[in-house]
Image 1: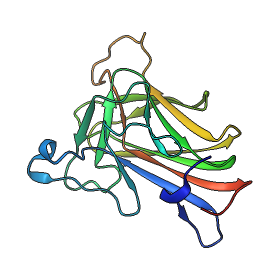
Image 2: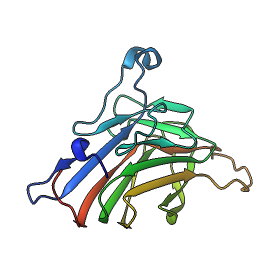
Image 3: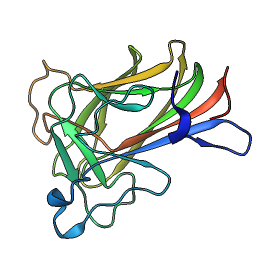
Image 4: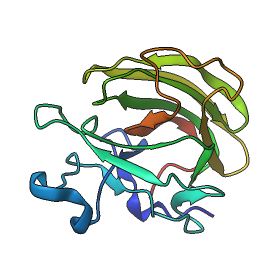
Length: 184
């Protein structure tokens, strides 16, 4: 079963967990350093999946980025890649509200597509250039004890001016709406 020690519990007993993606290796950070939003788990390109908990499965992003000082966390940092990437979270069966966070500190927009346990939850989302933040929220029902996100770009699209060929992802939050198991 899932190890719920990393989860937080709301006053009404419902569970939640938050992830902030980005640069964690001090050697990669430069003079700006690295920060993680308060109450979030720091995840970088090297955070591999641990059974019962969470992490990258299959392909892990090979890149991470530190954004402008003025951007709030969890948007400021992000992981990015041109290949599909999968992030798995073990959790109790039930219904969850998921909020994904995106931002591009680069000079061009990014396309994002996201599957949650095989269902398309974000399709052709354009994350604008220039530090604009974007959130997308959806509901997912978990029946097999895990939530796997697969993030990707459309491979067959024609290159367009002002659009990068890679996706970006700043993090996400999972909030329990209902479940069979409520306490961590």
